[in-house]
Amino acid sequence: MSLLKESILKLLKNSRPGYLSGEEICRSLNVTRTAVWKHIQTLREEGYVIDARPRAGYRLTGIPDRLYPAEILEGLATRTLGREIDYYEKVGSTNEAARERAANGAAEGLLVVAEEQTGGKGRLGRQWYSPRSRGIIFTLLLYPPVNPSRVSQVTMLTAVALASAIRSETGVGAGIKWPNDLLVDGRKVCGILAELSAEVDRIGCLVVGIGINANQDFGDFPEDIRDKATSLKLETGATVSRVRLLQVSLESFEHWYGLWLEQGFEPVRAAWKQMSVTLDCPVRIHTLDQAWDGWAEDVDSDGALLLRLPDGSLQRFVSGEVSLRII
Image (tube, rainbow, N blue to C red; front, side):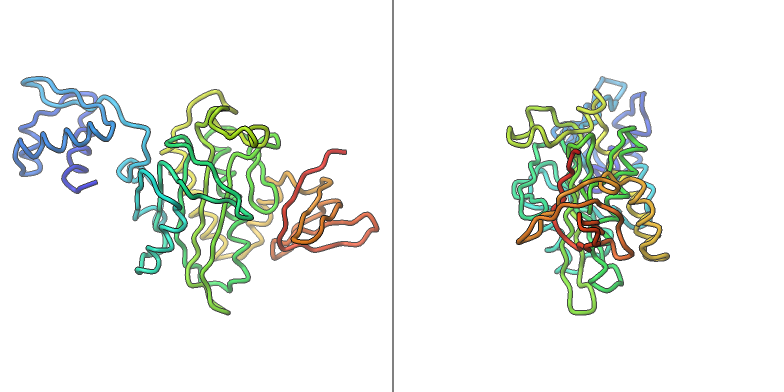
C-alpha cells in the first residue's frame, strides 16, 4: 500500500463513524482532491467500503477480510516480528518468497503473507491446500544465533506459540501432536514447516511457514482429507478474524522465541508437554524404513520423542511421522 493511500485510510479510520471531508484530507496531507479521489477508488477496489456524500465527505463503513499490511500493523504489539511485511494475493510458496528475500538481505522478523498459495507443502513433501482468503498462510524469516542442531526446537516452540494463540483468541483447545502439528479432536487445524539454510556450525537463515485453517468450510477440503482436517470456523461455528488471529500469533511467537533465546529449550519443552496430545498415549512412528509401536513417554532436552517399546526398552526418535493409536 502506498504511503499516501495508507495515510488516507488512517484518516478515515480515525474519523469513524463520522464523515471526513475531502477538503480536510487535502489539507492534512497537502494533496489535491484528484489525488484523494484516485486513492479512494483504489481502496474501494481493494474491498474497503467507503461511502461518499456531497458536502459531508467520505466515511469508512467496511473493512475487507484481507491480510493487508496496513490492517496487520494496526494494533500489532510486536517489536520485530511483522514490522516488515510482504503481501501477496497469490504466491507459489511463502517460504520460497521469504528465502528469496533473505538472499537479498532482508532483516529478521520479515513476514510474508498470502491470500492464496499455489505450491504450498507440508511435512514429508505433502501438499498444503490453501483456498483463497480462508486460511492464514504466512512465513517468518529468522536468523537465530544457535547451532543448526537446535532448529527442531524452533518448530516445537512455533507449535506452542500457535496453540497458545488459538486457545486465547478462539477458545478452541488445540493440542500438539509431536513434533508440531496442531490438532482439534484428532483433526489437523494448523501445520508448520521450518526450512533451513545453514553451514556446519551456523544458521544462514530459517524460514518458518505456518498454515492455519481459519475459515474453511467442510467442502473447502479435498475429499481425501475431510476426515483428517478441520478449521476454527467449523469448531466454533463463527467466522474468525484472520487479521486479529495473525496478530496474536505473531505476538505469541515473539514471546516464545525470545524466551527460547534467553533461557533455552526447557520453558518451551514444559509448555509443549502441557499441550501435547501425543504423550502418555500409544502411538505408531513411521521412519523412512520402519514402523515402531509403543508408548510415547516423554520428549527429551533436545525435543526428541522417547518411545517405550513393548519389550520395555526406550527408543529415541528425532524425526518420524506419528500416528495416534486407539486401544
